[in-house]
Amino acid sequence: MAGKPFELVFEKQQVNIEKLHEDLAARFMSFVGVSTGPGVMLRLYFQTPLLPGEELEAGTMVDLHDPAILTDRQIKAQNQQALLDQLVAIPWAAWTSQEKDDLLRVVAAQMGIDSFADSAAGGK
Amino acid sequence: MTWTTPRTWVTGELVTSTIMNAHVRDNLDALKAPPTEHYEANEGSDYTTTSTSLVDVDSTNLALSLTTYGGDVVISFHGMIKRSAAGFVFLDVEIDDGDTPVMAGGDDGIVGSGVATTPVCMGFTRLITGLAAGSYVFSLQWRNGGAGTATLYAGAGTTNGDVHPQFWVREVS
Image (cartoon, rainbow over the protein chains, first blue to last red):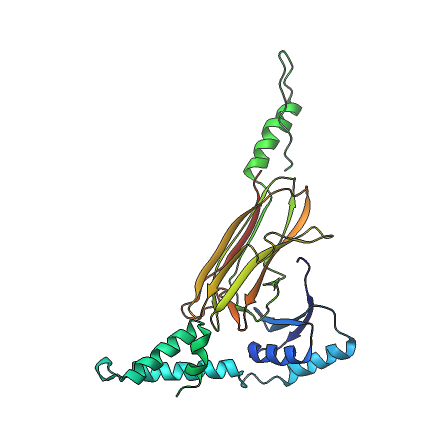
């Protein structure tokens, strides 16, 4: 479908756009996504224009946004990476079968094989 | 420079400078310098989006204005893209005549690729036919297939990602 979504532009330097996306998607049915680019511009996209009060509310959510707060997916990814870093530090000859299973789960999760994702994310 | 349909010469006609300038000089000029625009990103930061609907990548720099003479137009893009999690990224180009925008690709776009956290090269070359002579804005757009963030490297000095994407449009016939 052609035609650009409705856009709100803000100036904000530090953004965790996945977290901001999650928060805005939970609040606004018509929310489409967040983009950042060169400069300090942050763009919010909606399928339809917001009411004035809703624009103010979206602006407040941007103002209050804390980039240090992670989404569940980001926390899982961090845990997977930490587990991977821990595993690769072990000499191969010393690997247990459990550690090999853990590696397989992490790699599969990073490849997007969903059936492995939860077990890997919930690992060590 | 406007293209003039080449004259059909007839026996015994007087070749004037007006005819030669219009049908030889001006047409050669038109072939040598067709309508063309391009942008090569060299930015202070990379582009990112979480959008799962098509949105402009950069509505200022990666939106190219071109006035055409009714010929076919080639659009082309290349760049390096990654995602924060496994998923897809789709690229398309909106062609806006100021009245009724159309998508160059439509459906899932001109090109889509499975992208993980390791960056991949994405690009396309697309021939656009049937455009009437006129002024158009060609806007590069992108979207995610799945939750997560897509990043287009923009020559911003990112380690192992200091790659400069290029977007161009040119009338070719």
